Amino acid sequence: MAYAVVLAVAIHGINRLVFARWGGWPDFLWLALVVMVVGAAIEAALFYLRPDPTPLPQPDAPDPTEGFLRRVPLDKRGALIRLEAQDHYLNVVTTMGDALILMRMADAAAELVRAHGMRVHRSHWVAIDRVIGHHRRDGRDFLMTSDEAEVPVSRSFRPAVKAAGLIAQRGWRP
Image: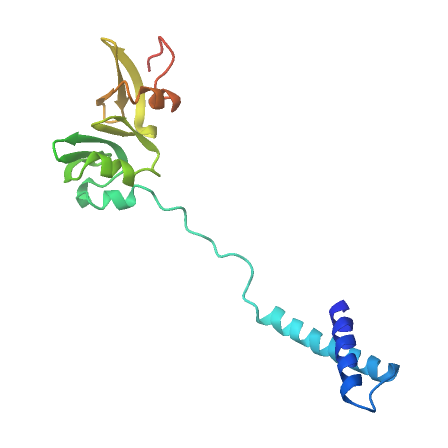
């Protein structure tokens, strides 16, 4: 409504300058009424022709390990448990088994940065939710994974592993 009045005032002023017989309140009121009707018609058309504002249901966030697991044979694809570097290969351990793939650990860790896991050693990466325990032996830390493997934790990665809650308080054992 306010927009219609402002627009009517602007058009009325231009009409007074251009047309000699234009002027007065009756012309202004007629012009304001026309602008309001046209403005209301345009707003109604935009409202009814606008796409539905309700958002479409979004699929669940993609699994960050999905792209990485495409390198693993189909029969071995499952939830990622851990990675172990073996020369130029990676032993990829999933809930469906393990497989060797040709890839560097640094590249795998970079690709899995959004996954819920971390490097715990220069040769080992673990999925955090697949770690079932921790123990110390001969001054070294080891993580137990759901596939019953002992994964060593290097001194350089120990602070990050401890911060993630994977190294428990002294005396704790699962």
